[in-house]
Image 1: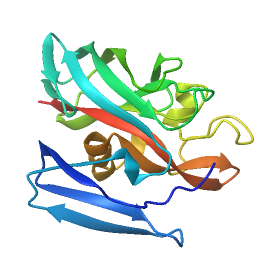
Image 2: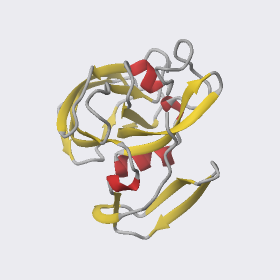
Image 3: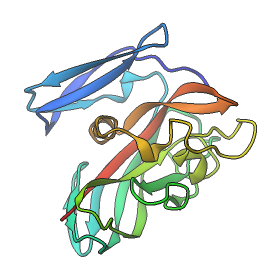
Image 4: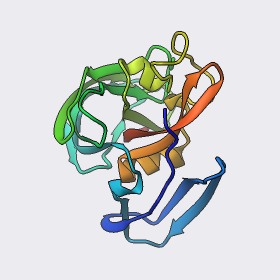
Length: 221
């Protein structure tokens, strides 16, 4: 897996945001965080990366309520059903010979069992639907249902960030599971449709990879 380096930050105005924390991968392999504040709207062009995968939510329907746009959020009762679907746009610069499953995982519950595969393979430039049928956490709070794509063979490899070529089965709890993403990283995905994130490519060997990533916010109260 190649390492990806940010080569530009092209900003255009499309959505209301007051503060965004970005993490840039520097040439020496280290990271630097910075915050953009008091901006009325922000998103990032796919030209941020030479090669990328991108997911942008178009709409989501949960428990009969439909919200359009790339940042839907819903209020649900503790322990209540979360049923419906969402539509997501997929785009990539990688060749069609790659396999692009659509993985979904809530960031609550048992990470090794709560994810599922909504699409087996996607083609760039098309919209896809994911069916949602899960149960809300019993504890009130703010949670996220993550949608992600990478050049892998199944949703487990994507959710665990274990590359298909790594030697062995998928690996959990090694520090890069999508389930454990920080809210700041999730917000980057929602705003841009992608996230630079470490992928396990061999025994204890990681390489930065551009995931297509977005999320639906779930407020339990």
